[in-house]
Length: 236
Image (cartoon, rainbow, N blue to C red):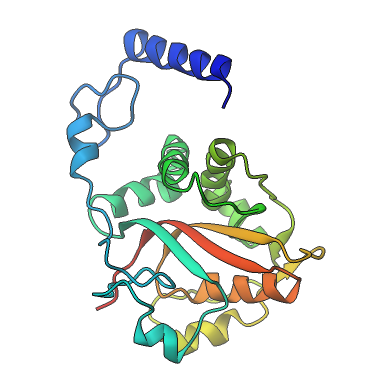
C-alpha cells in the first residue's frame, strides 16, 4: 500500500470513528468505526499455536498429525484464525443467514492481517452451487476473499472454479460419507499452470469440502493449495 493510500485510509478511519460511531457487535459498547470494541477483539479465542500445519488441528509439537500422515489431504496447508465456537460461530451465522455483509469485510481484513506473507498467485473462494447462491443471494467465501485480496495484493478469481453438482447436506455424515457425497462436485474452467492457490472458506469442519475442491484444483494444474479459513471446527 502506498503512502498516499495509507493516509487516505487513516483519514477514512478517523472520519468514521468520529462522525459515525457504532456499537460493538458483541457487547454493544462504543466501538468507534469498528465492528468490535478493543476489549471484545482482544478476548476473541484464537486457535492454539501448537497445531498441525496441514489441517490446523491440535498437534503438541506443531508437527503433521497422525491423521494427516495416514490420510494426506490434497491441500498443502490450512490457515485458520479462530475455533468455530462462541462467539465466532454466532458471527459466521449472522453473516450467512442474517446477511450482515459487514462481517465478511471484517473477516477478510483479519485474514489479510495474518496472511500478508501468503505469497499465493491466486485466491479462489469456495464456490456455492447456483441454487444455493440464488437462495442466499451471495457467496460468503467470495465476500471474505475480496478484502483478503485487496490487502494482500493477490488477484481473486470468482469464476475459475464452480460447484457443478448440488450435494446432499453434509451434516450428520461421517467423513467417508462426506467425501463420497462431494465426489466430482467441483469443476474448473482452465489450467492453473503450477500456480499456488489460496482457497478461501468461512469455516472448515471436517475438511472434506475443501479437500475435494483442492483435488479438483490439483487436477487442473495447481502446484500447491493453501486453505485459508476464518474458523476451524475442533474435532473431538
